Length: 200
Image 1 (cartoon, rainbow, N blue to C red):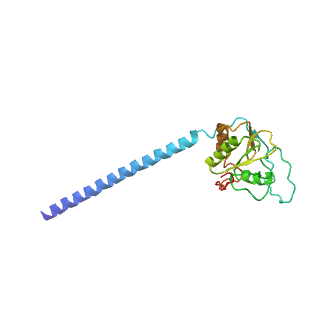
Image 2: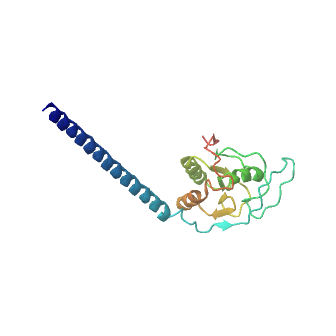
Image 3: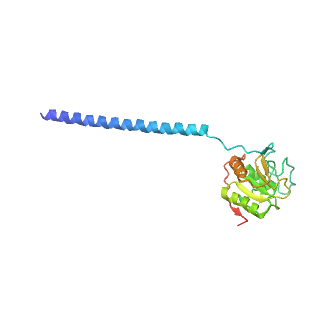
């Protein structure tokens, strides 16, 4: 009788262990299926989501190189104004808001790092300049807002090999250009949080 009770207890214990293993296996299957479904969903989203919108009016220029030049050397000639690529200074400017012009050879180093230059004619109305500066502050990184004399348009955005001239500070155009090109220079991954605000 004692053996029969022990056998019965052992059988019940074995049945409980087997049931626990089965529940654990079922949980693993459910978790694996859920993780798999999330992974498939993430891949599908990454493949099908639209990229940044194309920006109307953007000019593309040939890459004129990325070599560094001596600070005392004369400024090279470039195929656009403002320049979008080419020989430049080893020094870059900190991202942010400026009230002084940034030399071409310096700003090209920033473009190489994926910075968007938002330059405006010193003659634009102060309220429009203030709106451009606010846009730069709101983006927070990879943007420099500064005046520039002698441009064909009152407002010009540049990125590496890209240029967009504007007659007004059209927020949608500014945002589309920034979203498309910020962080996309040949030397990606260089952080450039806004550190300068000469207008504050």
